[in-house]
Length: 186
Image 1 (tube, rainbow, N blue to C red):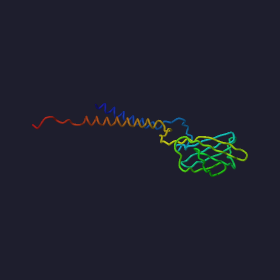
Image 2 (cartoon, rainbow, N blue to C red; image 1 turned 90 degrees about the vertical axis):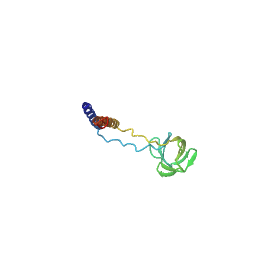
Image 3 (cartoon, helix red, strand yellow; image 1 turned 45 degrees about the horizontal axis):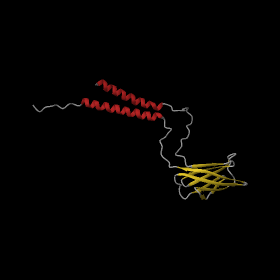
Image 4 (cartoon, helix red, strand yellow; image 1 turned 135 degrees about the vertical axis):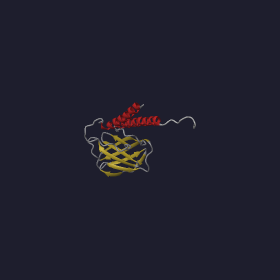
């Protein structure tokens, strides 16, 4: 029985140390270069509408809609543009923020689903009608997909080592417990 406890102790210690050494393993693309910035959260709902003349991108942040209008040919902001926008069949009042940049404040954040967007652009003697769909979905929490696989392996190894040590402790305790004597007083 002593050999079993020695084996269990050695196995538990080796699993614990082996799991700790997994932290030294490098992940994919390990080159000591600067790590790319991880996204801080889910992407905000957006739409993009393009034509031969213009590109319009809208980004929704709650009830705030930011719009960016550029020329399709060279991605320059459209100067002195008149922009009219319908969101779900309802016209929105737009405020010019900068050249090619507009903002709108909705009465309330839109409901989940696909919302049709129609924009009329007039810039000088050029005009165009753009159409897109704003896809609004609820954000859901995800685990970090970029977490290195050694973390999961280390956790399993530590759990297995703890289980082996607990089993060894329980067996040793059971072995050293003195059995109760049967019988009465003489």
